[in-house]
Length: 335
Image (cartoon, rainbow, N blue to C red; front, side, top):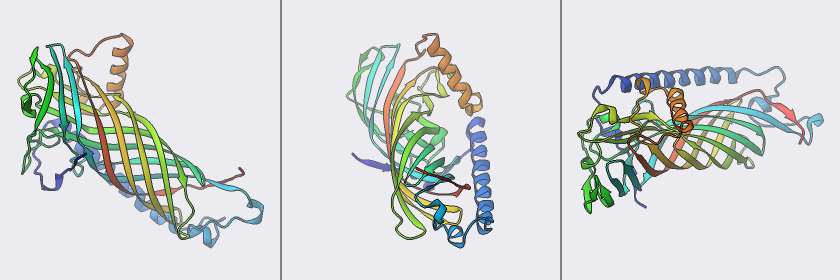
């Protein structure tokens, strides 16, 4: 399937809604904090722990006789940046006005370099060769309506024409439409977020410092759903975080370890099945995931159908992730 690469480095931003500015500033502070943590960790890694040998300080495992046949259980915390390349996908939408519409093969852009920058945080724990990773990935996915994330102006806007089938507002849908005839906004920003749980197999070292790994995992999609329709009132806009369905990922990469610091580069393929509620609800300042998810849970508990329908699609992304982190003090665990 055709792939599309976000061209955020040729886009011009402008002030948009205050919530979006708040999210961008929060993302900036998060990125600055992560860089500070990594800088401090790099300094700490140069200092040898009292019980570390020179080989251990260099990141080379050298079990002593009393530990022969045992494994080292360690925990790794890290952050990373990534650039998604999305596959095209169909979008299916139903609304109470008689719309039951499928839009064929939409393209998605990532807008990855706009704050908060696309990437994630993770924690890995276990005894080699098997470990377990909890991975929170933040991407953006924006349909081609001639705008960037949150309605930003673009230097070279692209508005897609797409094939359709089904009904639109009670009548037969035209065979082909411009996306702007159907949507004023269609995006998953403030994140196309996924929380993933992934077993990792850490393979034999290539060199004393370089070790490859791979894993397959599954979890949940938690996107910020932004779906607006042209000419409709503000209270019919959906702008909230939602539990939107299952997600999965495949990762393969290698780490370069220097003492307790490690740097990694990996290929990551993520796939999410999105089933979004057109609720008409809006996040508190567009940055309130716990409140939004609680509100969604309450709607489901009461058996309420979304006020303005449903929208479904899939988001498949290929990306290269580059990151760094810190291995915490390990303990010896006998298998």
